[in-house]
Length: 109
Length: 112
Image 1 (spheres, chains in turn purple, green):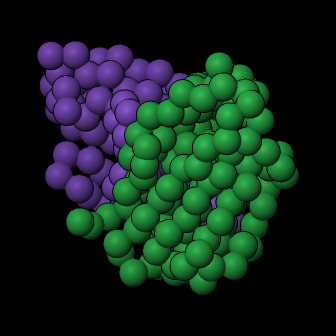
Image 2: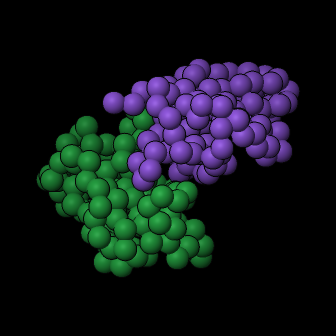
């Protein structure tokens, strides 16, 4: 059974701060996706990372896939209240994709 | 209309009722999914359809019955549910099974 852990589980910060959330596993994955889910809505795809060591940037969000393709991180610079939500990682092996429990981020004005 | 839509957005039903959730995707995708999202638990994959054929059924109780009449529509028929079935039910679609998934807004289900 593959273990998938997202940390921290909860994070509450002030507007303007930087933060990093993590997605770790004991298994190697072919790719990994990050989603953000706002209250009362479905998850929205943010990015897909495929290559070990890959870094992708989406405005103030920086996503990195670990060299061994077992883990990933999401760094947000100068967080804003609009970044509030549940951040989910979804690593994939073949056709099998599983979601982590997520990091619930709150950015206070 | 674009994307993935789900109706109803909210549903309250008794344990003896029969109801159906509807999902429609306007993306031309070939695969569709049902997920259950409960408080404090990860997203649970329930059913996967590819080209209208069910390809995965993750030990879901028979009180949940999926139907995929064509590649654009997916239903989840509900009957004799339990209070612990109360959750957000999310539909998603993807180009094919191995591709990125796009989610609908979900149906918030409460079983009384």
